[in-house]
Length: 321
Ligand SMILES: NC(=O)c1ccc[n+]([C@@H]2O[C@H](COP(=O)([O-])OP(=O)(O)OC[C@H]3O[C@@H](n4cnc5c(N)ncnc54)[C@H](OP(=O)(O)O)[C@@H]3O)[C@@H](O)[C@H]2O)c1
Image (cartoon, rainbow, N blue to C red; front, side, top):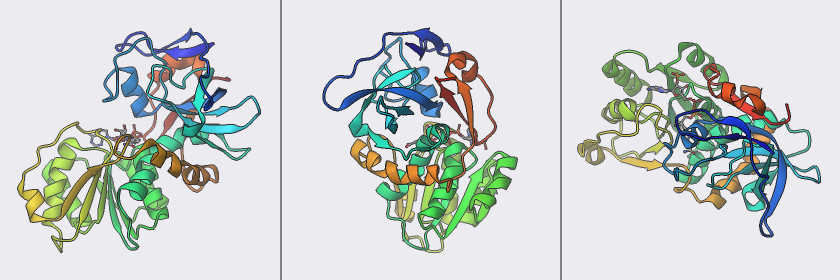
């Protein structure tokens, strides 16, 4: 069968032939892949930089997909951490990591939105209890995950959402998706931190896709601006688009009720993540959550890898085209 195949961590995958994988055991089935999203995590697997990367080559990238069983059932599934991912004509699915989608669901929309959507959905449902009236700050709200986080935080009951990001045009669109306030992350870091403190000093939850210098400046600014220092502030680390590390002055942990945690594979069990998928899929399939996919044929994977996307747009590879 044809697949996207990574032969070197320095180059994009090539459209190539590989042996069709064989299901093994009672839980596995072979499906036709209809659509697989090109998420940041897929890129970091393909260039060998993700923390779960085992350095094994060749590898087929792709961490999730929508597929069709031989009986015509539509599935969304999450691939295991192996070198055989979902960007292929067919993939082996472990039924315990799959959910059934209603007939008529748009495979491209689901493939585009499940991974970025589950980042905030799982964080807000499994890592914290989002109290009614909660105030949420989203750092990195202009990306795919961030713009879905704005919508999901509101959908799950947040009373006030502050959306912070760089891209001015995308930032301007976020009030239309539910953001109560926006904060530009462009410009002098100290001034950015002041703006964040003023707009989100009273936040209960921060959903952080950026980390690095952005979080490093934002943390003291938010804590200094807190009307009530002992009120818990759950800082949920989800992505590291601005940097993998921060320096954390110890006083920040003493001077306020700062609770730093992460959300992702490992901090939530696979079973816990899969349990959240049906309700998220329902919201995506029904169009409640706005998504912006760019479908490209799997056969053009090499070109697709370097195709520029607008902020908030997600490339989805379709083997059938
Ligand atoms: N833990 C999980 O469960 C989970 C799940 C999904 C995703 N993630 C992670 O979440 C992160 C975001 O994913 P995504 O799907 O939203 O990616 P994306 O659609 O590519 O968006 C990333 C955004 O990050 C912003 N950005 C990049 N560098 C920045 C910087 N130095 N300062 C400020 N903003 C910066 C850009 O915003 P502008 O356009 O405004 O420049 C960009 O739009 C990734 O690290 C991804 O791996 C984690």
